[in-house]
Length: 355
Ligand code: SF4
Ligand code: SF4
Picture 1 (cartoon, rainbow, N blue to C red):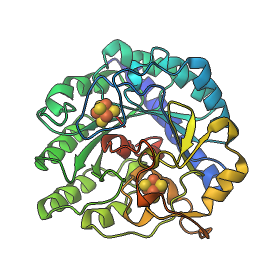
Picture 2 (cartoon, rainbow, N blue to C red; picture 1 turned 180 degrees about the vertical axis):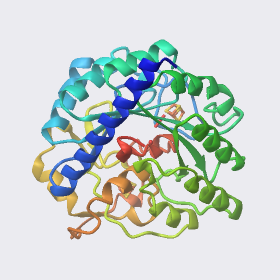
Picture 3 (cartoon, rainbow, N blue to C red; picture 1 turned 90 degrees about the vertical axis):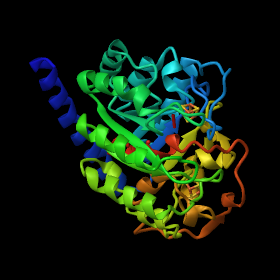
């Protein structure tokens, strides 16, 4: 890597860290702004992971002008961090413009990708567009019938990222039901750290985003990965210890208020696992609605495994008890998904979690 590139990377890291801390401080000072929003620019994906129902094979990209309008709404909510997710966001032909629009509004720009479409040139374009955080979720070491998000296939992409990326890169591995070889998560995490990235581990949830306890060996691996690196906000994850033990945990889900999931149709949902609640177009989503959701207890919260929403909630868990009740956990909302990869971007690091 050239000397100039190293300097640019350090400067970008410093700016990013300062910006992220400032945004988090602002979020702490007032309960009004949205802390994190996921936005879907395209539902189509180039892969077909068998556990995932957050993608299709035919959807057209959301037009740029429409995405910009949605981002304008998010900016008007005071949103601090926007994470672009999917489907596979790199399939959107005007992705760089989307990233640029997020940055022009002063919001932090993150993305979750399966990494397959990354090249040296594409990474440099993402640098220029102003991407600040990227997450790739790697499910196994060798591709199998369940997932092709494999270290063997993606390692060359990780090397390209290590050489070219000026944005923060987090590699997420997964544990839990449906993962054939839990040791793979450890291999992925070690490789990530060796390349200079941060590493997180996600615990697979069921179709309602709810927890399943880990086995003994899985818990040991989980502990090892948690100890591997301490450099990102992704580490705001104490709740994952409860999840690993299969214990219910106490927290206040602020989905619909401090966290928003904006689907490809421009509707606001609690999260990817509770789509359909409330399912209101973003242009009609009022401050009053956001305030009401802030004080609404979600029935699915005690067994929820969705780490990005729980990280956002740590800002407010100590204040504002929830006095209203919503029970989306009684079943998935229309179109509810089960993409574990997609659920582990740890956005508070500016991004630490769909593809
Ligand atoms: S608790 Fe919140 S984040 Fe978790 S599944 Fe329910 S609505 Fe989604
Ligand atoms: S998990 Fe990600 S990469 Fe796999 S099919 Fe779903 S969106 Fe595509």
